[in-house]
Picture: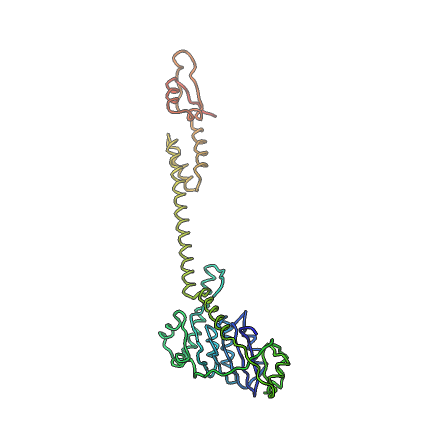
Length: 375
C-alpha cells in the first residue's frame, strides 16, 4: 500500500472518500474525484483528507464541485490539509478536524522550474492574484475574518491546530481519533455496481480491493486483520514533503521580485546600449571634422563634411570622398621661371604634393616646383 491513496467505501448510502495524496497531475485529479463520486451516487459524502496540497486549479474544481453537490458533505482532516487541500476541506457542509491534525494556508504560488520571460511571469502573477482573491473570499465567507486577519494568515505559512481552527471558525468541531478501515489493492471501476450505489453492505477501495480481502472483511466470523503501524513512515514522509515545499515554493512576492529584477536588467542594458551608441556617434563626427580641418585649405570641404555627418557616413568613406575632392582642385600656383639655372621647373600632381612631408613641400616650393592639375 503506497503512502497516499484514494479510497472509498459505500455503506448504507454513504460514500467515504479518502484523499491521501497530492492534488493534481501526480496525485488525485479533480476529474478523477468527480467521476468517482458520480459513479457512487451517494446520499451522503464523507471526505477524509491527508494531503500536502497541489494544483490550484484541480483543488478549486474539487471545492466548487463538492460545495454544490446535492448530497450533504462532511470533510474530515485526518492528519494534515495543507495548501489547496485546506481549501478542499472547506467544501464540507460540516468541517471536522481530528485531534492532532493540522490545517495549513499560504499565498498561492508555484513550485519547480519556471521557464518564462518577463511577460510570462507577469501573466502568471496576474493568475495567482486572481486565485488568491477567490481563496481569500472563500475563507472570509467561512470565518467572517477581517481583511487584516486574512492578510496575517496569508503572510508566510500559517498552521492551525484543531483548537485554533475551531476558535477562528474554520471548522465546526473536533473529533476524537477513530479506527479507520484499512484498504489495499488497486482501483477497479467494476467494483462500483448499481447495488453498491443503492447502499449494499460493501467495503470498496477506489483502487480495487482483492476479492479474497473483500470476502474476508464481510465475514463476521473472521477476525479483523491487524493493521500495519504506518505512523513512523508517515511522520518521516510528512517531514520530507514539508522540507521540499519550503525549498521549491515560489510565492507571489518572489515572482514579483524576479520581474522587478528583470525590468532593472533590461533598463540597464538599454542605458548601456544608448551610452555606447552616443560614444560611437561622437567618435564618428570628430573623425570627420578632423579630416576636414586637415585638408580644408580653401574652405571647399565644409559642405561635404556636414553632408557626411548628416548622412551617417563613416570616417573612412568620407576620407575617400575628401581626397577625391582635393585631387580635383584647380592648379593655383605655377612657377614663372625655372630654378634660375635655365632648367624647367619640377612639377607634381596635387596627390603627389600632398603626400610630401612639411619639409619636402617647402623644398619643392623653394625650387620653383609646380603643382599641376591631374586632369
